[in-house]
Amino acid sequence: MKCNFHTHSDFCDGHASVAAMAQAAYQFGFASLGFSSHAPLPFFAEWNMTTQRLPDYLASIKRLADDYRGRMEILCGLEIDFIEHCWGVDQPLFRQLQLDYRLLAIHYIYHPDLPPEQYVAVDMADDQLDAYIARCYGGKPRRLVEKYYQAVTAGVEAGGFDILAHLDLIKKNNRGGRLFDEGSAWYRRAAMTAVEALAGSGIIVEINTGGLARGKTDTVYPAPWILAELQQRDVQICINADAHRPEHLTLHRAAGLEAAAAAGYRELEIPGPSGRRSIPLA
Ligand SMILES: [Zn+2]
Ligand SMILES: [Zn+2]
Image (cartoon, rainbow, N blue to C red):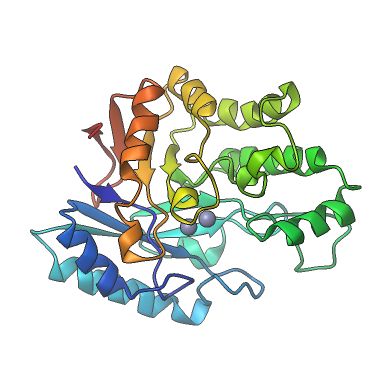
């Protein structure tokens, strides 16, 4: 069953309208499509939707859901940043919304030395991340990585989220082991704190193929060894494209399916208008 629950549009940093994304999904034969624009933040971020656009976003997706009723299920979600001491799904802004699901994402890390409303951004270009490592972590990438996984763990433990996005996003700027060794014992220990927090949390972990689509990574998020650890702890998964363009919706789905099967998964868990359900891995 083709589906995707991590879909951007021109309400945030996507490159197509919600209608164009839905039309492409329908033509690809999707049974279900969930939108997940970058939710508003309390400071300016170029890829996030503004609070002013939120009502239009919700209404547009509701209209699309009505248009496609009986042909393709359309869900309304948000990709919401969790930032320690700052922001999360428990904000009054989000609590009042009728969402089908909430994606948890760590794109920003709190650092006490930074001025108010400034955070370490982990989803940036190499040189920008390097500048943060120099400024905030004494030039030691390991300290950033450990803080990143602590933030993922805190987001999971905070609760209220349904799906964890790109669990090991921190590897995005580490192609070829440029900054740190992902096979080292300390890296595995750091990532395992998040894995252990996910066990029993009820949060679905996405296999995210968006890094592949944008040429940023050679493998899906999360890494195969992390997926295997999640599988051993009965953490449920789904496969998401993190699509910013219509053609991304199906581009690397096969890689996602392959990674799930290699980790021992036989089923996916997906959100729906009336709760979650399991579907066969296919
Ligand atoms: Zn994201
Ligand atoms: Zn995204």
